[in-house]
Image (cartoon, rainbow, N blue to C red):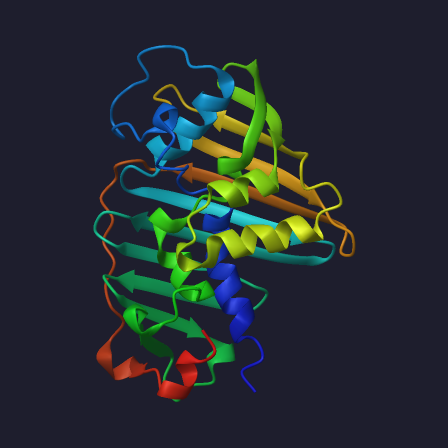
Length: 256
């Protein structure tokens, strides 16, 4: 029963697990203004880390996909982290849609098996390590970006390098279970210390594309790709019609 609910939670976290926000204690990677242009040439590792911070400093649109063999998850979304607004659609593999307005999360997926199309959850009622909660908690994310150990510029705004999942876990916040998630990924990887990645930055220093491949011990290559755009473009998210929405039951919270 409700066997696909974990998949839904994981799918919503995919776009963020890969690298939203570097360690806030890293003074070399503090988040600059979304609109401010880069004033000096940074060394490659700092450029990529600051690029992610710059991208997440304001509103943005995001596309993400994760492929493992014949299985794939695709997501498209827009978000305003400061205003806590988030709207995402995708397939994992079934169609899904999620909206966040403050602490109210609205989910739409056949796996929810509700009487109405949309289910409303109060994020404050979820456990701190909830996969669903972490997927909406932008500041709790560190992901692979926090574990970059080397990088080089291979073209104008194009970078390649290597990340260490163990170091990423160490840099990650313990909030929302992100560190646990990265440690689990490291256990899956054949060599968690050498995850190859490619990144692209625009003229303003935003990270606009990120891709990386984790060679695993059991499911082949896990390939993640992200694209970000529309920086600073206003984001509006509306709650679904009340007539199409039902509040999650106490039992449902156990699944998230």
